[in-house]
Image (cartoon, rainbow, N blue to C red; front, side, top):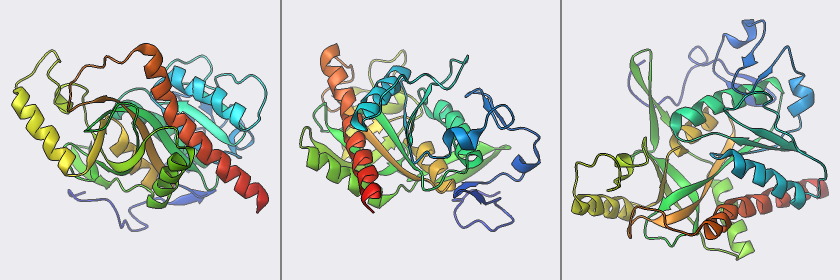
Length: 313
């Protein structure tokens, strides 16, 4: 496969079975005796996946296991659900997964490799469970550009460090470039939810995804640094003027894999530092906790609105 965006693939180039509307591009899956989702500790033979997950309509993912446990409690309260919610990834410590009615809450760790592994298994889980009309939203933290800490950013476009709206992966020694387009209508709906809440500032803009927290994001406080503060500020100013509102480490692969799988997707991140003013995060712990709750408040409001609307229709 030559370098270029993997968009208009032919049927021969992609295996597109839509069990329940979830698309997978792997002709080998149906010939497997069992598909064991190793990092979830769930399998097609050992578990009744359609019975367990077939009603899922919303999947919310985030880096921290404790943050997703907190989101589970929050969304259960918002939806009026009662009960104890245990981790469905039993006897394994890579990820956590909780289910509250039609809402699945999963941690994904930090960085592109970690979230990509989780997404492969999540997509197959939804496929095997025959889920339909699923919306996936990443809840995260990020470094803001010219935004006060605590601002919530809804991602308009996920771009790489070169400002390209694409994700490049090396497969069998060759580069494959995939589109990172997100659902624009979903982004606008989420922005509107933030405005309806009026509890914190919510903006929409491009999100830059990097491969590293330190040098990749132009920080001056890593173990290595080969550039000056002037170099750093020149770069941050350049990407800010190009429309980048925040920087994190998962959005491009998240957008690319959700698009490939026919999943509506969005990224909602709170900024925890204004990178134009410094690199280190000095916000007090209790303030940081409140900041990190803001994406879940916004997304919880969105989910509640959607479920109430579907009940009325």
